[in-house]
Image (cartoon, rainbow, N blue to C red; front, side, top):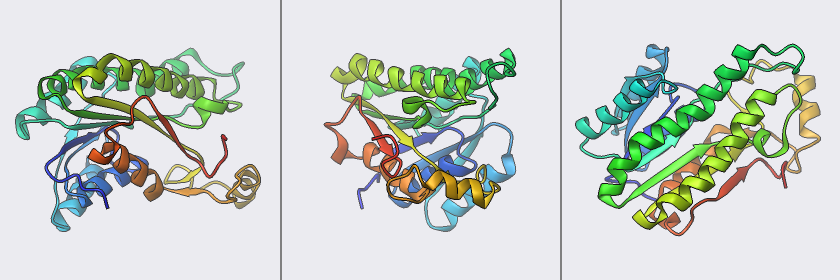
Length: 248
């Protein structure tokens, strides 16, 4: 198990799903974790309680990271409270699926702002501290939808494809300061958002997955933990697909 002892990590959208899984895994490996959430304080505090109950260190911080002032406050809180930020995981995301003829412009804007703009804002705020320290790990959660495209997801796929371009560009921009920037692209993953899908739909989707199963949140968290570790110090600008072979 790669160690993250001594590191301070911020995970956006960490009150549930993949963000929660990453927060728990990072804490298990020794990182101090800031659990960012938008509106569900109860769930975020439950993640913090779970981490501290297992001997870890964590705190929750409310911020709508698609808004510049709030993204800045999240990073400022981290560098003030913990005196550093070593790892940033841009995970916050939403979906507003619909075919393009029926999709409202505000649904396009919401998804782009929450998924892509937030990653840009949080990275911009965190990079200054990381550059001074000459160390940092930025991990952006994209999706195979950003690689392959998905019908009914022109907004979501565009946001996730944008994250890939953002990852590669930023990786080139700040590599000289020993800051790596990578992305994890999950495929179909079992989360609270997908648990209510019909068995028929789930089984149908498995026919497109070479490993013939959906992924688990822990498997995404393992990938993020590796990219956050010292062992991954020579990897930057990379998109790691964790999708059972779907997008290969």
